[in-house]
Length: 368
Image 1 (cartoon, one colour):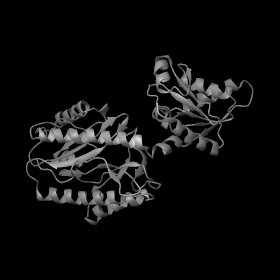
Image 2: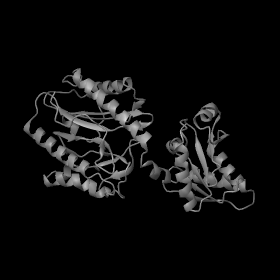
Image 3: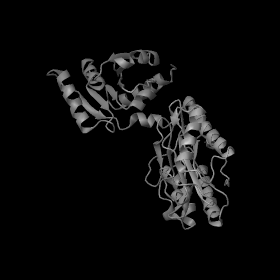
Image 4: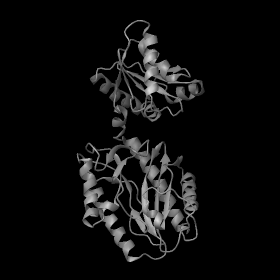
């Protein structure tokens, strides 16, 4: 295991110290993975400001934890979170940060009981929300994370290219058949799993932003929208391409050109320090000026990484500014109910210069 996880823990430790915390109880499994490298299905981390961290898991993962996280003390207990909370009291923690967006009301009550029992009549530690502190760290990717994202995007690019070259995207097939073949191809090319449930939407279904593929048959003249991604080393790619089967009508070409223009404007707005609302507006204003404001019903994009949707959110209700190293999507769309829709989406990394494009499949309108 490289020192990158140790460096991440140090950044969280600094945040905890600034907030006057003695420890942070990390219970989100992806955050535990980010901070330690542990990939088991039961794990939590007690991060202490004095550096004496403890990874908790159960007996199924003793060997795995020892291999993946050799530099952190291990506590083996099936009741992982209560055991770590008791350990925090035993080691003198007075203020303990916890992930309030992950802990349920019942879970919080259980933690309070555990802390009270462990205090055994003494001062009960205070539970303090850390307010997505780890997610804030995860929003900026390091070089290893960007490399994993590049490889995930390459798998998706190659899978689509192979299907198109082999004639798999053709009239007569169903959305389900195309989606399953695209998923299988990504697995063959090295993906651990698809990033999410692959969207295949043909004809009028393409006007539904998140249509679930069904037995609808692809037909000549249809718009075909494909939104998919691959997971590699835990990191997710995300790409949408919309093509036409057979012959493209004038209205389809016009809508496609409009979305392509908006997408280019959104990509161009990705810059260090850019406000996420302004980035959204750069693309949305193009669509609104063409009279289609009501036909673009979702945000422009989102962060990608260990989750398919993570910080930052890029949309009218977003908050914050972009920083170098953020991996985000830009995915405007125009959806005409009953007719069809177009979405074009890339995954990019914000840099001090122009954003780095990770999804390299052409955005020229493809007519198959």
